[in-house]
Length: 230
Image 1 (tube, rainbow, N blue to C red):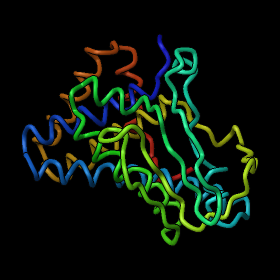
Image 2 (image 1 turned 90 degrees about the vertical axis):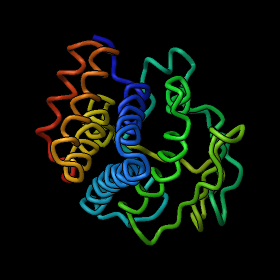
Image 3 (image 1 turned 135 degrees about the horizontal axis):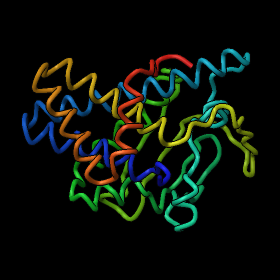
Image 4 (image 1 turned 60 degrees about the horizontal axis):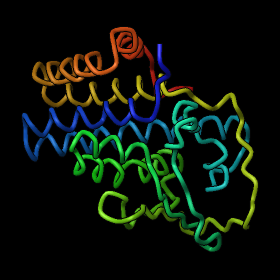
């Protein structure tokens, strides 16, 4: 079986957008935004729970330290991972993202608008889930410009500041894909009831057609997981 990667993750979100907007137009787009936000807030909350357990303050430095993902080996080998350029460190930490596998997948599926919406809300909501008093901004995205810009306000980092990540906190992309699918399914079903169930099933079928039965079964198995807890 192939490794779950950033592309699989983007495929799930993009597929939900296509089905939600295709069936419900602007109402479906609102449901998509809510699903992105809920998914991201749960990620941020898990990070905060681990940091509090370790008696850490919920600062931007700790936010970076407790991030749950690293680039997949598959995309590393292809040279297709996130490429980041640091612009400033203090008082604000600002970066450019010059290459993004999520953006490439959204574009491949001809769902650029879904990517714009996803990236507009995702990281801000992760930060909000981690600590709602931190300010994170995304003034532009790679879909409409040559690169994304992300800003952590008042982060006060030092150049070459080392961020030490605990491997125990890193989750592979099967987990992230399972979390994405379950959360989007839950929100879609909660809003649209039986039609929401049908949309979620259609996304799973499309995933199986694209990536095979074994990976789809793994995705389906994560429906049993409570992603609110660590």
